[in-house]
Structures are given as C-alpha cells and as structure tokens.
Figure 1: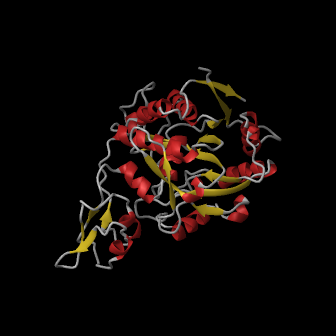
Figure 2: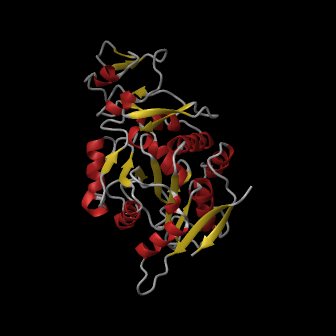
Figure 3: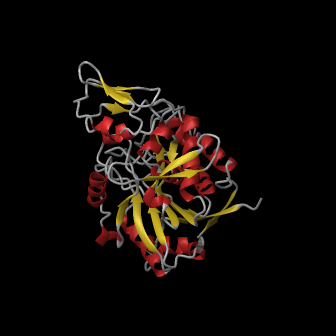
Length: 369
C-alpha cells in the first residue's frame, strides 16, 4: 500500500513570510486545490473553544483557510455540534455566543458560523455505516448535508482519548448530542432526582414515552422503553438528566473513529492539525494548562489517520516543557507523553480502528516544507 503524504511546516518565519502565508502554502502543497469546490457548501469543522480556554486555534488561521476555499469557488461555513455536558456550548445560542467571544464571528473569519446539530442538539442525520461498534451515526445536520468537509484541529491532550486531533474533532465533534451520548456511554441516561424541578421538558421531548413522574413529581426513566437517544439530556436545563460516563477508553476511541468515518463518508475531505500550544487537556475546559512541548507547527493531509499518527509521533519526539504537566519528576524523555499524562487512555485504539475500517492508513511520508 502506498504511504499517505503528510505535509508539515514549522513555526520559523522570515521577513515577507508569516505563519498565515506558511499555512496557505502548506494546504496548497498538500493538494487542497485538487478538490472541486465550485459552488459547493464546505463545512469547516472546528472547535471554538470553551470561553476561558485560550489554547484553541487562532481565528486568523481560520480566515486564511476560508480565503483559500473562497478563491477555489467554495461556500464555506464554520461549524461544530453542541456539547453533551452543560457549559457554554450546550445549545446553539450559547455556542454561537461562545464562538463570537473567542473571535470566530463572521466579520473576523469572513464566513458564517452554523451550529451543526441545531438549537438543542436534535438536528441530525442518521448515517448508515454498519461498522463494528455503530451501525448508524447521528451526525449534526449541517455537517451531514455539506458537500465537502474540512477539519481544522488543535492537537492537544485529552482525558478520555489520550489526545485530540483530526479523528476526535471529526468524530466526537460532528456527533449530535445523542451521538455523543453513544460515544461516551455504554449505558442509558440517568435521573438525578435531587436536581429535578418537575418542568417535564424531558417527558415532552421523549419520542419513546419512556419518562414518567413518581409520587414526588420527580422524573423516572423506563429503561425498557428508553433507546438512549440523549434528548432528555439535551433539553434538561437543571442537570437532572445526565450521562453515565462508563465507556471504556478503547471502545470510546473506536466509536469516535466510526463517527469520523460517518462525518466524511462519500464526501471530499481534507484535514489540518495545529501542533501549537499543546495543552494536556481538551479545549472543552474553561481553562488550559501550560503547553507540554514547544510549538512545532502545522500538518495537513487527506488522510486523518496518518495525520494524527504523524502528529502524535512528532509530539513524542519533542522535548518536554519545563513547568508543564510533564515536569512532574516521573516523566522520562522517550515515553509516550499523552499516556503519561492520562494513563487510563488508549489513543492507539482509535488509530488502529480508523485504519481497520478504511478511514486511512497510519503509514505515511512526512514532507517538510
């Protein structure tokens, strides 16, 4: 099998060639212009960052990618799906406001911002994939209906998947709230009756009529009827309906790979990882710890599996930063950095499964520009 090409540019600049110019040269060298963008809707899948977290991709980079796509005739928009947990991105109103707060507003990025799965996470398309873990995937409608998918991912650590890159951004990030529930949990939702205020929004939103109310007017779930769609979690504003966080690390990574497969199924797609400000945890937190390595640069490829594998290899080959999560007296150079920080995670499972299901090969040639 021919090796995939992963293109890389470092963070060194010179007069007349800044990082935005280097990004444009990188994606063109990697072949983004081979995609027929003419009059096509282009979903630029990105993480807008939880307000308070400063490690997300700078909007300046995103605007340059938008500019390239527009020059190639495409109709781009920025998108992400709502979060499963409560926070400032759990519904489309808060999510868009958070995107704007972090600089991703239309004037700055020169394109619209669309929340992929709608106001409350219920706007999705079920994509048939018939794979090992998932037979279908609930993908946010704006991503499912796009003609082309481009992922821009901040490469960093993650407390569930080991690291977050293209696969995590595409898989978990494209899933609707019900899809995220499927990836996070092997169980159906639970009710924390202490938080239930008897608003009955969960019952009104349950298509299976699985929710009733006990003698204290607190919600109950009939698990014989419940299908685990997650809509009760989506509409509950009081943290009464919640996730049972019990999916094994390797299984979660495999489900995420399958959702990534669904997000780009039958669509032209292209992927960019920003290996900068490599924080130890996800951008979903409202803070970011010190970067664990120096900024390395930006990678691009048509193959998300090879792209992530190349990125993790470069991070593991880099020197650990002083006063970071790796500066704990226990880390030794040459160890896997992400597994050291999150020892219960198994990032290799996602890479291996992505390769198995045909999402891409981990074999790659790194082409440095």
